[in-house]
Length: 176
Image (cartoon, rainbow, N blue to C red):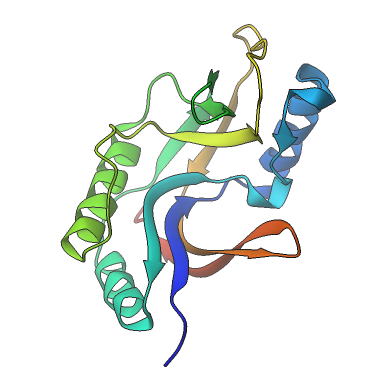
């Protein structure tokens, strides 16, 4: 019997955009602002699944594979801080309909499969900094990264040797 895995569905920004965001973050936030999320771990969570058995992972993957939805363009042009969760985030002022539909589909499927889904409304974002202990100055509007979203990914989250790594397990294309 295999151990449950900590899983989530997400969108992975292209590596080039990840690097650009990391450079922007370094230029706009002091080192003491919080713990930066590694470039390779930057993602936009669509649905958090939690600890999932191999059987449930297989069922969720089969459901995800049946999703037929067109791709969309994501524009990251907003930032903020949630003091309670102690994170600084990068998000979108106008979430594309395709993003909201995809997240709603995945969250509904996860809930039907017994994966707890937060009652909080979906707020699409990438976490930039964790463990922010105080309010952080957020850069003025004017920053923006756009990229086509052509797939979504099932990730495993593994904490080992004091670090969290997100490993892509399966990718599903969005239609043209």
